[in-house]
Length: 287
Image (cartoon, rainbow, N blue to C red; front, side, top):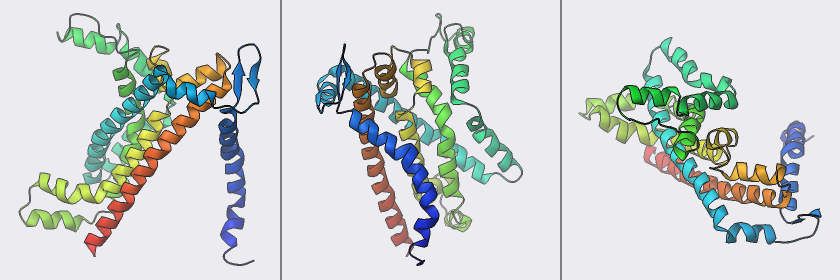
């Protein structure tokens, strides 16, 4: 067996598993999106573009996609600010505090997303702790209900996804040579200038990678928008779920999922180009 063929042979079981449980279902969803649906006849295996025409010609779906990507962008920005700050503080801690607080930040990943979201639902209600605290502090005279609002969905998703940003940025911070920061300080730069001109450019790949993960996960999230947003604030995932399991219009639900996938892939590829350019710029500057 040639050395060139060895990697393919060794990875064949993983590739077969990947193809069986991911590629094949995605191809089937793509094919179903071109089928027709009749109210009394069910799914018809006939080629049609009707589902995509309905999506791109109906303002209702534009609103759903705008809400989905708008919330995803806001969550990505919030995670970027919080996650980058948390990762920077963690990287400057000494042992054993670094490991302890890293577990505190990443600990929520060990808890089910549904459980965490239900916890937020208890806090967001008009009789929840947040509403009572705001009224007790005199900041509002009426109960505050964050349930079934974009703000509530954004807060819950930020809590769910910020650990992914922390992991990505923290990994980049670990590769920074501490002498670069010390050199900048010795030349008279302030700590803020060092962070802005020395630290941030070097961790930009981690920031962009974390942003890619957070945006993709926020745009495709189902449990959190379904629980906090409810049926009044649908996103693409909940809309596709309703089409599949409530109205049984599988072709339209599949088309919604395909459009979401393609839009997300476009964002990911664009961000990947930015990462590659940033890597090239940093590498060339270092040389």
